[in-house]
Image (tube, rainbow, N blue to C red; front, side, top):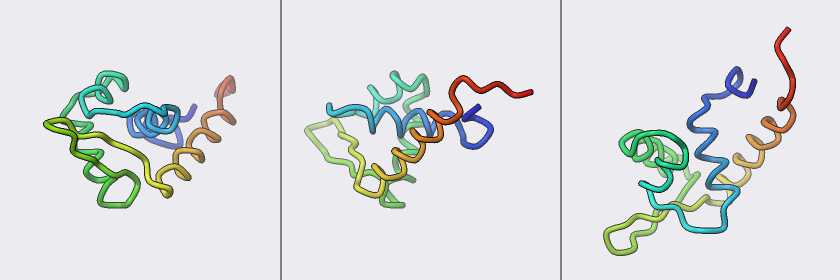
Length: 90
């Protein structure tokens, strides 16, 4: 039901970033969210421009982390997901 209110892929990516204390490489994020690398790169770039994530370069890899603003939004997405879980559309 979350997909009625929000786009599933960006929500899935935000929840992955929220629920993990580990570091997320763009390729790992794409694989874990069942999306393409190109999609994740584009989405993360837009999120960075809006202050939701920061990207740290570690060698050739880029590590993605939520900012404080991004963490707040990810928490809201998680609350919406929890509120709609198990509910069915009549």
